[in-house]
Length: 535
Picture 1: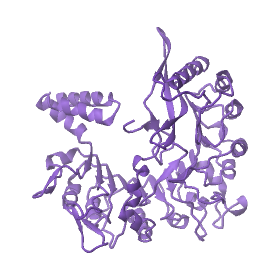
Picture 2: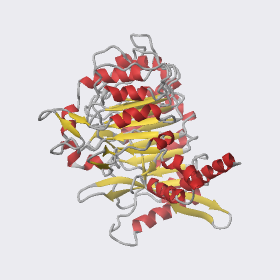
Picture 3: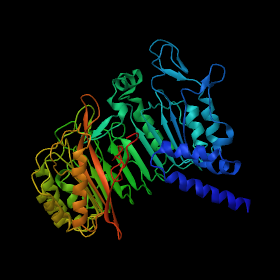
């Protein structure tokens, strides 16, 4: 009976937490609930401490140093963030660490608390490392002793392995993400990590020192093929600045389902082609090539001549993919003639900050749609995302709707939205979308009149809500509608945002339009947008 009560209380806490919109609100609710009585405290602790971060800059003293979590809480950790403040090494003297000589490497203190705790975190599933120093070998050795660990994410952290720790046979990572130091990109002209807008981010000594660190290339291979292992990895994210196609083609990846390549398109003189890499991944379903564009010659996805590679792998292998995302650094056209079974397709625009990317022109989009028609993936396509450089006319929406009749989600974003005189009536867009009987979500950069953004009545918002209602009444399948707008985020900074509305259909009140919280796609996410933190 007591066990049943504990389970019921845990479910109650989970439901209460899931009803909150923001993570901070969730934690506040759970903390208040845990103070009610002992039983509720025991039920809430696993929820409060499921995801934790360390170190905490304000939780320390001179005698004990940086405070760590008490041992009694370790059992609740499922996602642990080791995020070391990047300003500590640059302080004079360095905070919570030392440099043995001027200009030397920063060596942190009190990491032994983490290395001692990791093997005892029995339910830890994910570990995130972001540190302005080389992670010591004993830290990597400790994480291999945490046999429950399945996901490892290392970003903005210099990597060097003097010796690779012995990896136990029962340590099996399923997901690994390796993001280089100072990889700061922008997708379209939309939101990005707030820290990328700060001058201090680029002035940190360790970023200037370790960006493009040649030692990281060898370390990445060790992390991919020894710490992680191709036989168990289902998700891999790696930068092609540290890992080229030849390296990926060296091994068989029998269970890999998602491959995400970032950084810049590989320009090595090796003989491996992209088809040779995919040939080593028999169940690969999702491929994201999110390279930042730095050259005018696009990355070639097909072997020279469009036929088989020198290793006898044919482009027909692209037909195994279900989801494909390509940036503006890639040659989009040819591959779509072979990717015949796609259900999700995204054409992105990515650039290294502070540059703003140049997205697809209307001519490029027309060529893409022609390739889709030839390849035949229009029969299966359910989710389609485009970032374009020019205004979107209803005629383009008509073309997409006529070709891809099974779409459930369509998103067309202009890179650098601006209000102005509306060119086309809303009914032209509604006529196009009404052809899509399964369309549940649409986001489109319809042109709206230019309003005074200081008007407290916010007519720009009201106009979009009226358009959402109009589309909802004319397209019965729609459940969610979004419109682009331009938001001021600083004195001289603007960015593209989406204003989303949920369409609730009721018998009593008819169609009800509900504004949704602001959302974005945190890089390298492509398919599912999430609420913008602190928006």
